[in-house]
Amino acid sequence: MIEKQQVIAGNERAVLVGLIHKEQTDAQVQEYLDELAFLADTAGAEAVKRFTQKLAHPDRATFVGKGKLEEIRQFVVSRDISLVIFDDELSGSQISNIQKELKVKVIDRSDLILDIFARRARTAQAKVQVELAQYQYILPRLRGMWTHLERQKGGIGMRGPGETEIETDRRIVKDKISLLRKRLAEIDKQSLTQRKDRGEYIRIALVGYTNVGKSTLMNLLSKSEVFAENKLFATLDTTTRKVVFEQTPFLLSDTVGFIRKLPHHLVESFKSTLDEVRESDILMHVVDISHPKYEDQIEVVNRTLTELKALDKPTILIFNKMDLYEKQTFDEWLADDIKADILQQLKESWQHKTHGNCVFVSATERRNIDELRKTILDKVIDLYRERYPYKSEYFF
Image 1 (cartoon, rainbow, N blue to C red):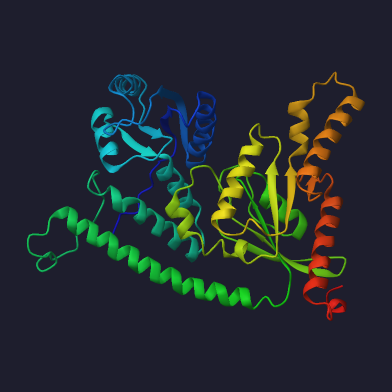
Image 2: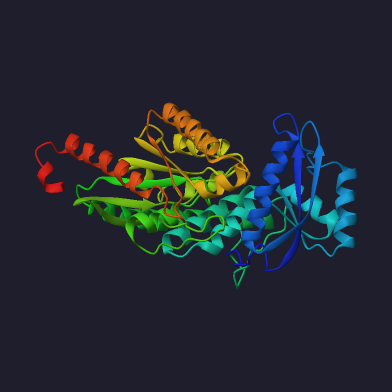
């Protein structure tokens, strides 16, 4: 069994490394490193320096060139750095080679995200999903990196003839993956039964990039207390609440946030949790409009929804954090009528793109929440009438 050690200990000092190439511009890499720094902060590490390099493609042995690696090594030695985080996935051999040169712990973006998920997991389902993703991440890297595999006591008869240590490690991990998949399948059956027990209610799922305010909106609309904080992946477990607007009931679910370069194994492991998205009737796609790259984040979410085969569902685009957007966009001296005109143009543009299926709100300031409630209610009633034309009086 792999020892349960956290990748990042609290208050570690880290440096971040990104690569500029034909598919990633300098500006994009800086944006990705901004997000990587936020991920590191969420995990409890302080990012004190960034290193970038222009290469046509990653070096097969050390990801970055020898000169850049030496530059990183000198900084690590001089500043008491204990952790180096690469923004792209590293192979096992790359991790091993880089660690030999730097003499400190080396992880990649996927490993960091998995570590955050492991810290955030609360329910049995989330813990099994994260553990499964961790083993799937480790399996292809066993040959190139040192592992934390504990040996079973009494080794006689435990290894096949001529079996090497790496083969034993691989077999242990594969057995663990198989066991976790079986356990997850059992939990999924229970979750499916719970979802079926919800009856004929219309179901709405909150989706969006991580840290856009989904949980805050969930609390506001359902008058519940779902955990929310200004950290990435504050919510891992899907939370479902019954909500009633003007005597019309429906189910509202908060789901895990998406992010760029989300590890494939993590998406696979969490697909059972994301069944709530696939089986929903309406999606509420929450967007942090104050983020400078909010349109890119919309695209990331849409790509993930496509992978989940849920992009074609009726969707309300909710532009949240309008208060922050206005603070960042408008100078104090700008006339009110000009501000209003700019905002009107923004809203009309998105109304056109979404065919009227968008709302601009501030969850923290409770701004425009009445319009959001009306938009939700209208869509829910329309769906009830379409689905149960002879039972409409039951719902409203």
